Length: 356
Image: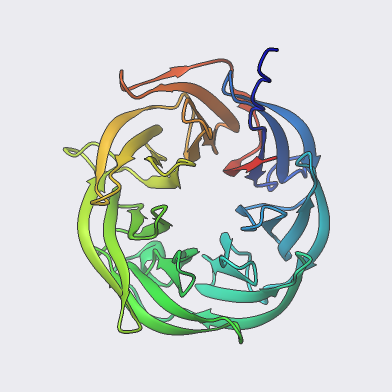
């Protein structure tokens, strides 16, 4: 009797985008994922305004999104379809990033426009409860334009679930807050200062949580830190740095994306002015990064880029050209080969792959 074939993993992808300056009001699109071909096929559109960023709960049961009104919550069914179940105000200007803690009990929202970090309680059914804390970053920057005031661009918890790391691109620093889970309150525990004018944008942690990576938008660098807790306090030590762009000519470039592959072997970033994507191999023991390639993405302003869950293909979300482009990734040959036509989508911001 022939052995039964193993069931292949199935995925859907959620793509968030702006609806401003567009006749379409579908801020989130749902796609079936073709893992073999490295392509997406649209299956649904969700009405929501200006979905700056989306994240799924650690349980995989819910999806949360930024919207003009604050945040919205969606239930994910067995086929990856979305059902809106709640919305809540963040008592401030529209957010730009959000994440949950590792117990799905708190929702953190970063505010670029008002320099605010907001914490909301999450319910067991995925709905959004009350605001438990609001922290406005303060200070005057040393530059002009956005570099003269706070802009919280990202908020990400450490993998031990003890601290939340808030990147402030206006103040060139990442503030580390201790999470008090019972009350939902935050207290400042540390500050990581970046190079002046570097604009720390996004932060990610290695799979084991021992290393932290901060992409700096204006200096096109990724700062690498080791992380552990010592005597009840967070301890971050800078262990390295990697460039996302040309080492000889970083002027006029702007780094954007920062995503790990699903197995944490690769770290992906992008440059919004040179319109390139860069892929690094992340070294598990040292945390250091080795650049594999940096190549054009056949579009304009790649705000996000992500490897498919099997690491064989890559999708780039090209914000200004209103499209996604797709490539086959070959690490051995250090190449990205376009594998079909672009897919039009209005002002895409980020993508999340969800395993069914």
